[in-house]
Length: 324
Image (cartoon, rainbow, N blue to C red; front, side, top):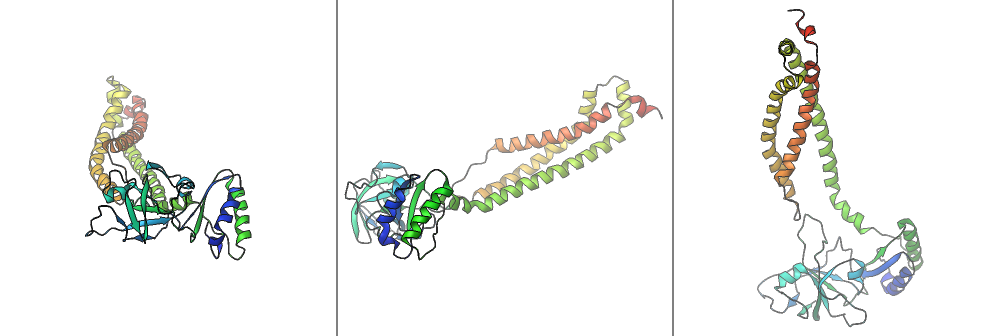
């Protein structure tokens, strides 16, 4: 929830009132929205830092409840504690620990913006942007959260009812401004709206391609069966089974489908791999994906041809040979 006007001065009252709502399980104040955060520093200093290297580190000013409210995982050390004096202590993420060259950064001295303290914990890497970007190094501090601009709340239960209660409290404390909020999971999902659209279009065009291709195959199979009707009649008279005739009529098309797959696979791999390269975090393409797609296409094509071929193979040879 965005805090406007003099809400920052009422932050503790705001927090207390929010925690009175049974469905609100955790509340934390922060200096910005974690998903659209632009605060960073190049002045951070730590033990063993190379003075000739330039480092840009994201900075989050928060309170002791930030880690638990956001559901972050501490992998080394501890989180902030209300029982301990943590106003000059820091928590960093794994990327920051690696950048600083620490195998074990706990209790290492660090400073930025004139704040001097120690690193007390390392949090598991988390995204403050999207999957197109690398995870940036982050320093989390609870030195001064009185100027926080957002209040974060973890809620459960019926969202509509909870938000009605939260809005009532927010409007009571700040009647001069509209209540502004967003759900972080929904905001994060909006980063990938174009991928969802692309996925829908890809499925739609794939379906259209399959329908058009199968109509073409059906037409060709019908034409081929008609042209070879007398040949099929003669073969049946000489004892050829329906299955043998199906194989006879389908093998040429099966060969063409296989050739088409061999031609299309490198192109599909190249295009898909180039698209995935846009993401810092991505899946790897393997042969099973393409083999499965090729098998599905082959089966659909063969079934389409076989359906018409079966009709021709089942025709009484008397009907196709009576004019001879």
